[in-house]
Structure formats: C-alpha cells, structure tokens
Length: 408
Image (tube, rainbow, N blue to C red; front, side, top):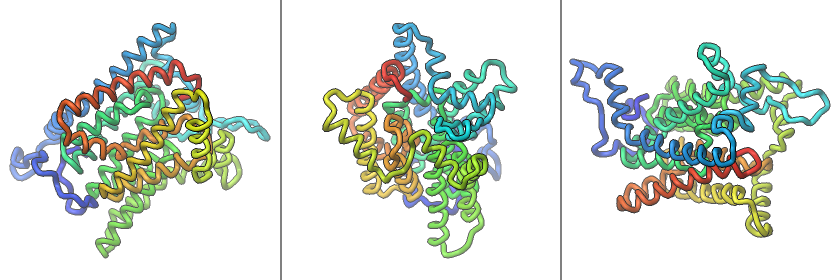
C-alpha cells in the first residue's frame, strides 16, 4: 500500500493522475517492479516532508504540554498514558470485559471496542514495560501510520504538495494531542486512511478488511463500513458486470462492527444490548436535537461559556461547512460517504457533548478544501497558517488536558 504506487486497472477515482506525480520506474529490475525494500525507501523519501511535518507539530505539542505539566507539578507520562478513557482500555487489556451488576445503571466497559486493548495486551506480553507504556507507544506508532495514509489519499487526489499540507493540517487539529495519548483515535485513523486509499485505488479486499478492523476499534467504524460497501456497490453498478473483489470487499467492510455489536447483545442478553450499554453513558442518537440545543445554550445563553466547549462548538460548525465545500469540490464518493456518515453519527448524537471534536479527528478528508487552498496560496501565507495552527494546537492540547476538568 505504497502512497505513490501506480493504481490498478479498476479505480473509483474520477480524477486522473496528477501531472508530475512520482511513480516508481520498473526498469530498475529487468522485466519487473523494484524490490520491496527499494519501493519502501522510495515511498518514505517521497512522503518524508509530510511525515516530518507531522512529527514536528506533535513534538511541539508534547513540549508545550511537558512545560505545563511541570509548572503544575504533574507528570507528562501519566497525563498521556493513564487518563480518562485510557484507563478503561487498560482495564480491558488486563482483565477483559466485566459486566456491571444487574439492575444498575453504572457505565459498562462494553461500550469500548476491543481491537486496541487486544493489541495492547498482545504487545505487552512480548515486550518489557507496563501496558500503559505499550498503549502509548502503539498510539504514537499508529499516528505515524495514519499520517502516511492521510498523505497517500491526498497525493492520490491532488499531488504531493497538497498531500503534505493535508498531513500537517491533520496533525495540527485543535485536539491533535489525542493522537499521542492512550486512546484509539490514531489506530482508527490509520485503518480509515488506508482503507480509503485502497478503495480509491480499487483494492477492494484490502479496503473491506481494513474497514472491518476499524469496525472493531470505534463505534464510528460504521461510517467507514458504509463508505466502502456503498462505493463498492456503485462500482459494480457502473461497470454493469459482477466482479468478485468489490463484492467481497463490500461484504467484509461491516463485519467487524456488526460482530462486536452482536457479541455485546449476546453478552447482556438482549438484541439491542450495545445500544443499551451506550444509554448508560447517556449516548443516544436523537438526530441532532441535543447538539443544536447545546450550541444554542453555549453561544446564546451562557454568560461565560467554558473555552473548551466553545472550541468544540466551533469545530462542529467548521466541519459541517467543510463538508459542504467537499461536496462542491466533488470529492470521490468513498470520501463523501465516510465524512457524511461520520458527521451524521457525531452531530446526531444526543449524548455527551465535550468529546465531539475528538470523535471527528479521523475525518481528515474534510481538510482537503483547506489543503487545496493553501497549496495555491503564497508560501508566506501557507507558512503563517500552518505555524499558527501548530502553535494553537499545542496550546489548546495542553489546556484541554491541564485546565479542562473533564475528558478530552
């Protein structure tokens, strides 16, 4: 899944290859493709500026957070590795899922999907260090894998410069600090980005398999499953013939999410068991009524609304506006379905309001209109925007973890 490998014969992308986009010369090996090691090195060199930009932004965020934790006499490692949802994942990795006592409304760990804690348990069993350290290390590694996937999607559609800007913008999101915490956002974004890239390049079995794994990672995996399955179906309709790869990919995509939801139903003894578990966390889908009510209360009626909640509200509004721009830009169907379904799930939830910006972190295709605009702007303007985004992300990340009294 090299970000610069030439596409196969069948593809769902409406745009042609970007002029001047780099491709690997087959003549390095007589009559075939270059060796795998050489292709990997070439891919890393090609995506190097984007990956280095991502690293620089996230390291700046960690440095600012480290200074803030020092001033407040906290430790940096516990803040990143063992706070809020991280402890739920670590508990699952250590003890498995535990049912709440019957007849109680206590929050249940069944609300958390299994892939991340399973990976933490498996890696911790063969490496030194605590499970918390392993969880944090995996999040950092997966953030780099995700950055590579974000770059691959951007490069496929608009070329290297736009892809690099897209990757840096994703790193500099207001809640970007979560990428390097013991949370599932990095793993989910990595699976999402590469599944979308595989769908764009017609690798349907890979796309479906990655979407199935994403469905075992977060509840919003259903958005990615819908995107892959519906785009595979659209491909078959356009081709007017039956091809086994799109069929298999489309069938694989929802399996992870459906399997876990079904397992929770069996575990709690009711067909809607997973949704009953979410209700204990005050998470119910109400079509957006609760979201609009929260926005009204914060922006109209509150005298001094909390800064973090104002930030969340702005992220939701800007994300919806960016989706409209994405529609106007006629992005590929798989991207539009994914970001549209993601927004539908996040904005339509009537549950807790404060984590909504974090829930939208995997929706990186929404940033494509901004990346395109910056790619056409003057270099000074681009540098100023990216620098401001990186600094604000670092400060807001530290504020979110050190001042805001709740989870990110």
